[in-house]
Image (cartoon, rainbow, N blue to C red; front, side, top):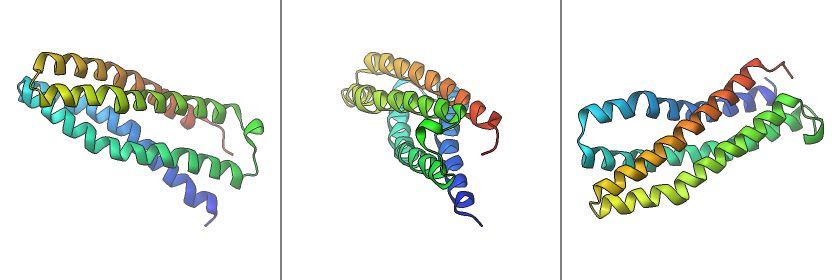
Length: 154
């Protein structure tokens, strides 16, 4: 077993947690919550979901560059000589991370404040904005996964 074969699965699992979690939230949890819960219940649920899911996303945010750079290093490849698909993946990672931090640092506190104040219309408006950012981030993540899947082997 090579060091690369130990690092690569960690990298893939971190991406799976992040992108797969967004896919589940967008495609399964959101429609179910809309059917099963009233507005206040739905908003309260999302505050809790984001809090739990974002712990995992922070793990992915840390593991992805560490394992990605580790794989480059193990292959004796410098950033400037990295294959184009690796450079694209790195750029898309930066975009995804920036969108995640926007939600975590700016939008989630607004949602939490609205829910704590029982300001359901404001909470719904913030959740709607978060939904759009998550949807865009999911699209970026799907493109990133497609680039990774279509890549030539190291």
